[in-house]
Amino acid sequence: MINVESLTRYFGDILAVDRINLDIRKGEIVGLLGPNGAGKTTTLRMLTGFLRPTSGSIRIKDYGIREHPLEIKKLLGYLPESAPLYHDMIVYDYLHYVADIRQIAKEKRLPRIRKMADLCGLNEVMHRPIGELSKGYKQRVGLAHSMLDDPEILILDEPTSGLDPNQIVEIREIIKKIGKEKTIILSTHILSEAEATCDRIVIINQGKIVADGTTESLKQSDSGECVVNVSLKNADLESVRKELTSIDGVLSVGRADDDGGGILNLRISCRSSADIRGDIYRKIKGTDWILLEFYRETQTLENIFRKLTREN
Image (cartoon, rainbow, N blue to C red; front, side):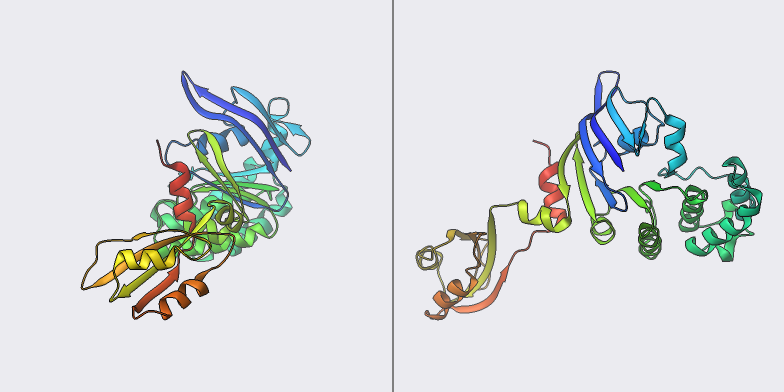
């Protein structure tokens, strides 16, 4: 559906996007994650034809971005971070105006506007000025605008930026509904949103793709070891270390933090190829140590994101 090869963009001497390669299949919801200044918005603007690449190629279906920019734009719906709305127009008039610009056939305009109003939850505000709406409703109007001519691909730049938690959930549900029929690329800073919404996550840092895959595949490939946290009472570090490092698969045993109230908090690093929690428990059970807490750390998308985007 979308093929990107060696995509590069300079702003003067500043390299914003550095030789990105990306293939997106039809029907995927792809989340583009990265810190501020990573190159997310620049990448999306090149995909939509609003910015010309310095080098590299973008092909959408059978069209190249340099040779057929208008044909590509007809396939796309684009919602930038700040929705470009006319605040003095009422919602219905604005959507009718957009339908006219997009040259939607007159007999199809009203049914299409009604469908977008239902999908985006706009029926209650269709006859209110856009300027009087909350930011959440303005984002919904922007979504309706981007989908009015029924594009095959939807590109959303920070669609939930500045929204409250309830509005974020509402926009997320709308995106999930749309994703059943369309290919969607969205950028976001909200990691839980990407994890809940997207089929695939692409992490970009300093203009380069540093990770690409499902959330689960990123978690599994992120580290070659796992960590088990244990809290013990009536135990000293040296004795515990001597006992637990004798277990095959335990790499190291160290303090998790300073002891408090006679409690020894430990982080046990293990090879990830085997779950040895049972062996650790049996070792502890054979002593007079009192086990207060015992759990295995799980990798989170936030931890992976921080690790991959942390500057040296």
